[in-house]
Length: 339
Image (cartoon, rainbow, N blue to C red; front, side, top):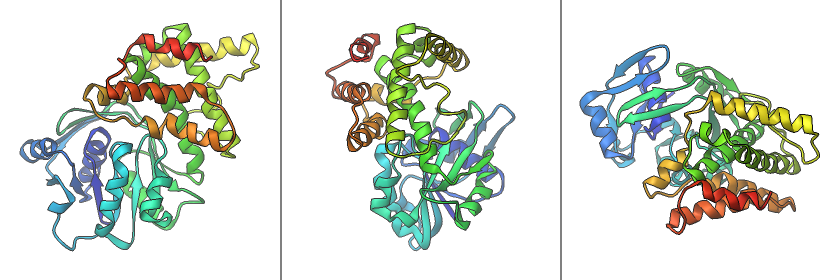
């Protein structure tokens, strides 16, 4: 299988490095000249809890740099959600007739990508491990976790199983027959960790050390889960049962205390985790919030539901993007008033 990897940031660097180390020969396109230059001069370096290694692939800055007539079986799109539609469209001329794109984004982009490529050309992937790029060309896998892989509807096809065998060089693979449910389970986590982190500019440990923030987390999470169920989506277990952190509106005192305890434990276990939206906002770049909490708002409206917390999060992060609001703890006062 001939593989194209587009996006050599934190996750893309880990995936590319592990595949090359295992003997595969993916074609890499970074979209960032500094990354491509550093890898070309010094190699692609990967650090994991188990090992460290270095490989020396060629990295292109643009698809236009690839030799004319080159075709691929699969294009792995490992970039921010707000860039994936153009990437999918630009990749189509480089695919064999039976070729397909694989989405690796936070949030839910698959339906939008399918409008560009055709539904039959979309395979969905969820990354369960943590990864960061310390500097261009130097990557670290910061936590374990599987890659969840599958079609948007129905069981994995032969093409997805073949790709899964190749990606098993990176980490364990879960071939999933309910990717929509898996995507919504991951979305529920991203809507609290990623988006609220972007509002506050704080690490997960800092946020979950405060009771009022844990209450907001629980409220936002409840809106996401309720929306998915109202839309007829069967939630799928990813790292844990998606109902583990769910607090019903009529929960007893004991249930609320227990769920709050679980959130405190999450905060301690992943204390240093910081939202990727923070980095986007600090760099003055658009965030992925429209594919996260924005997806919840759109789905809830179709189901005739109200999700005031998620709706206000989208609005506030939009204001930070425009420069009319700053990141900070004070932003959560507006969410508290909606609880």
